[in-house]
Image (cartoon, rainbow, N blue to C red; front, side, top):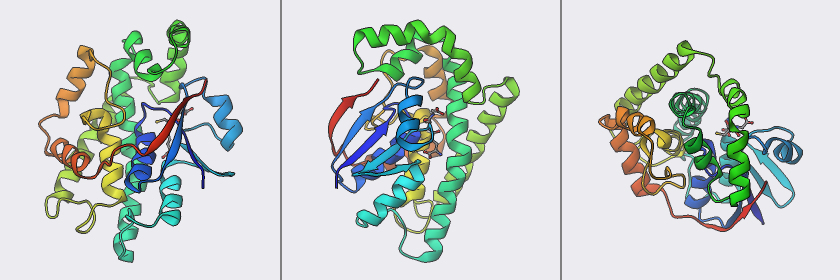
Amino acid sequence: MKLELHQFPSSHFNEKARWALDYKGLEHSRLNYLPGPHMRPIKKLSSQRKTPVLKLDNEIVAGSAQIIDRLEQIAPLPALYPRESSDRAAALMLQRELDENLGPSVRLALFSEMLDEGAYFCRQFSEGKSLPVRLAYRAAYPMAKGLIKKGNGLTGQDAVDAAYKTVADILDEIAEKVSATGFLVGKQFSVADLTAAALLAPAVNPPNCDMTKPEPIPKCVVDFLARWSDHPTTAWVLEIYGKYRAPKSANVEAARN
Ligand SMILES: N[C@@H](CCC(=O)N[C@@H](CS)C(=O)NCC(=O)O)C(=O)O
């Protein structure tokens, strides 16, 4: 089966899908899109506009949770779903809650700090592209900024404060949940741990993550990372990345738009 991940390299939801593919050792190609220009081709491919999208031969699966579910069917081992049905239900429910609350809040909080650093913002999302593409992307940024704000719920200070509070509350909840066994559900690494660690990666910047931040990191992002660095959940994310984030099993990185 030929697997193609249509993705943004710098995206925590895409990191979920990459991690699942790598954890299962599934060879795949990664096709990289630029946020913004991605809309038309991704919509054509999957009838919706968000990444990640996985193409399995002629089958299209959109959404990180749906992709993990499909991978669990085609490559059950090593398992990301707990074997026990009550644990599986708990892990899937946690994944859903984290996808709905943690993922968007981490992104909104980080974007609220980074949006005024246009050069860095563009560099992070266009790394690996040709110089003309990067220059064009940077030139379009002032016009795109309003759309980026709107598309990510950056409607004002109240939204930013709420996102920060959501992240802080979830960090505390995770620390409490993992204190007994080191895992969010049961005694083994599962989709719940993968989801929490991948969605927190933009706030932790793990060294073996597929989306480490380009250097030099501007002060606003250094401060964003420092904000959580002493939290026990940050140490937990680094530990989970160290133990369970298998190296890349992608065979090609092709450029798209
Ligand atoms: N629930 C979706 C969320 C995916 C998502 O928010 N993707 C973002 C990147 S992090 C995206 O593609 N945004 C572009 C857009 O909204 O057009 C998932 O789990 O995959």
